[in-house]
Length: 232
Image 1 (cartoon, rainbow, N blue to C red):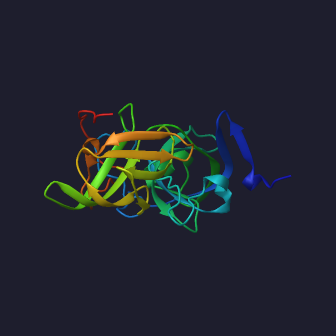
Image 2 (tube, rainbow, N blue to C red):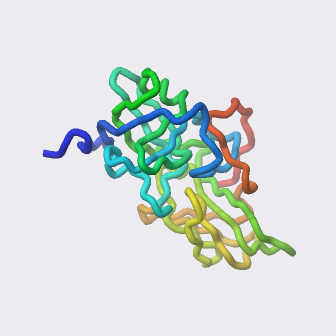
């Protein structure tokens, strides 16, 4: 029989990890780790850093920037508490799930320390739009040509992007959920994301929302007003 700490319970299509290790991080996330793009479309302000502690089972953040869970939404259910959804905003290698203080308080109701709760990855979207959203950071461009860009997709209903190509130029993993693509690309270039489940989603490069390097979402952030939805 498996030890309780690594017992996996199947809930519908999702796998929940019981007795996963939770700790409290800080009052806010920092710009490192996932470096999620800054936006006023986020509906979630609860956030955490995902680690690789064995108590997380298959939910661990694998080192090496492989199939990054950055931007995914996880559910935390602690004994006697209501479930809390939180976005993966950073990494916590060597530890468990490290929650920002507001999220820790909601999820555990305990003083800072260590808690063991049930955790599962969900298909909840973190943005208040009904479709995936592509973000780009054009770091080298001129005369209408982009020579190097970072690019990512979020709001994918739990699907994790494994690969991206722009007009057939395959990108490499940069950091977090970002990919780096080198080549000569124009605004009408076709962007194709391939997910770990084999599905794909296409964009035109001009549809990708520009997020300048250093424009990183901090959680929690002050409430923001609604904005126009980006194109699907």
